[in-house]
Figure 1 (cartoon, one colour):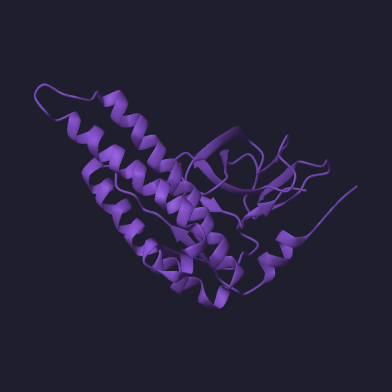
Figure 2 (figure 1 turned 60 degrees about the horizontal axis):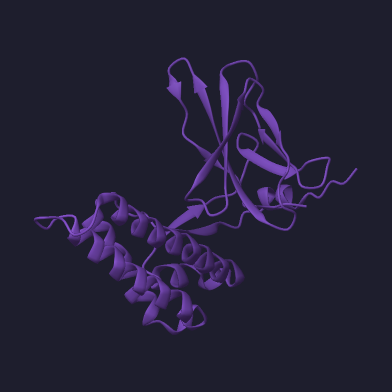
Length: 217
């Protein structure tokens, strides 16, 4: 049986990991302004020279989104909402990739993490150390699986909701349980997954708890 305790070791550490957050607005005009700002910040910083090709793609897609969005407001419209949303999806995909790249750079040099994240025009979220009341993730018994445990929360007091993500932006919900633990299998070995948990109680749901990013083994 394979058990690697890297997540538990991280949970005991007092080191606070800084998380890159996009915080993109829902309004399309505000969204375009925000992603343009992130592009300009990253494109003018030597910290992100290795991402030049991805930034060029982002700029092209922002231009297409702006054109399509403007086209939905002309009389008669020159673009449909569906066409605009297609371009919007492309830009969101670009941003998910870039926030992951920025996070990788920040994790590689923790002492400069805040400078790296803010230089990208992104927000910084501090993720503190994990204690016995928090949500932790470790390897499952089988390769390609993960064991999720909401520590300190008794089973049977409410439903436990789980979700996983590749980037912390787009979440895939996992089947809820009555138990404060669940196993997720069928994961790609070597990939990093982010998991979160909340409890549904009689008085409503708790806040989501996010565990340290977990490398699938």
